Amino acid sequence: MVMTRRMVLGACVVGMSARAIGASGPAWGQGAEKPFMKVEFAFSGQVFTATLLDNPTTRDFVSMLPLTLKIDDYSTNEKIAYLPRKLTEAGSGIFGNEAPGDIAYFAPWGNLVFYYADYHYWPGLIRLGRLDGGITPLLTRGQFPLTATLAG
Picture: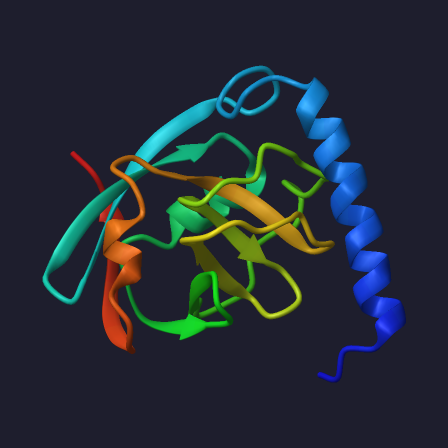
């Protein structure tokens, strides 16, 4: 997809609006965003957990576990993994408090997104949760098999 200046400007406006909304709202995992359960991810000899939020998109993702996917680098701030099918978008909505370590679902492409650097809300992005122990595992560059299972 070719990005036009209008698309970039529109994304900036949406991102700034979402950031302003989020800045006045509750911290991650509080208020409307409630912790739901933990999932364990593993790739390249690294195992890490994430706390997922309770929303319809997250519950749809959890219903697919366990999964074996392929994780790969994308852009300069994220890794992505395509799911075998698209998830419900019922958990969508503008969110704030974006931070490295967030895990999201990008509805237009049907993929999971693991952020290891700053990012801003983008239409079609649905936050699923956040890594528990920091972003270090995501700094390993390359394409690897990724497993996702319920933690516990």
